[in-house]
Length: 407
Ligand code: HEM
Ligand code: OVM
Image (cartoon, rainbow, N blue to C red; front, side, top):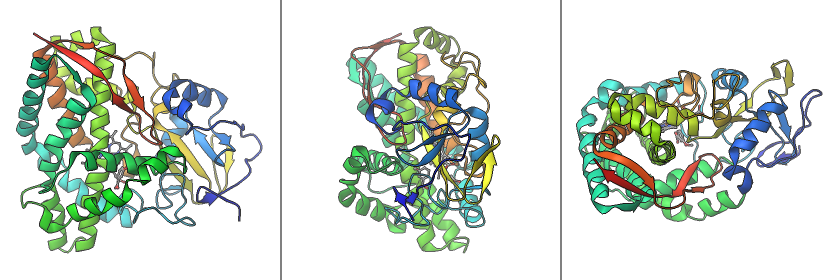
């Protein structure tokens, strides 16, 4: 068998256009809008010989693939590596990288811990943290928004919500970036991320243990499910690891991208100030417009077809969520950022049974940040260039100097 990046290489079926591009090249990751437009224009599915994968960039087909967990499985990995053949870099997630019935059990436990009811009590704490951080930045004048707000806020509230006794900002943020880079090929981004593994992974593993968590956090709810016999003690630790894998870098990216959207579209920030109740719809539009997780894959578990095009068992499909979110066949003026668009059906949290189980918590965090901004900041100015940090699965800022002018 001819393997590439841990999955089976294959020849495309007749009718599937071939596109000689590297979606993981730095230039593509940094200028993804052009790549997505061409991906959608070339067809519902294209074959990319560089990595021997199919790619889907149109809304309809991306949604179809993501919604059908029977044909397009997650248990073979949601990156380029096919777990049926390649060795995963870490023990696979027992929620993200599994199918039913395994998924059903762990999903239930996580969904309960992250339900609107379970997280409602966090609202006040999120709000106070946002006020404290944003007031400080208003006083400071110019500041580096990625470190001082996008990272500072989630790192102030999320480990505490989980009940972590040990918190380490650098390791928490870099672990997320590592997990997402690991989904791509073994390029320079993945290699650079993996070089940190021997420092970060043992720290993360230790932080997930029952005795490193307080008794009143989300982590304790997961261990409570172990006490009730729903999951084993080891499974509970793995589910806490999922919190730390998926819960930090994603919201860091969401906040950074929200600030970038509002600084680039001052008229939209004016509308948010005029009506702070738009904080939630504003975040949904940030998600549609920027798609923090730009790509996840699925693996065809059987011979099948999409849009009338044949797909062989074992095929890896790059699902470009960010491209689906900009598809003009689905969205009017997709390139326009409009905080009251209310983009129902956007793909930034995925779709189907694996749809983001932390989305209520993510929304609670962004609601706190955006409503405090709307109430206390008169305008947001760039005080330098926004610089993006290429990552194989996430579209995040590296740094961005901003200024908040007080009301
Ligand atoms: C799943 C995005 C925040 C935990 C997902 C998926 C996406 C996503 C696209 C689907 C994965 C797939 O289908 O393969 C995001 C974004 C976030 C965010 C854009 C913030 C802006 C969070 C937070 C948590 C979290 C705060 C934890 C508290 C998870 C978990 C899964 C998941 C555990 C796996 C669910 C499953 O497989 O059933 N997320 N996420 N996410 N997310 Fe999030
Ligand atoms: C996990 C997980 C869940 C969602 C996203 C993610 C790739 C990881 O369960 O480890 O990042």
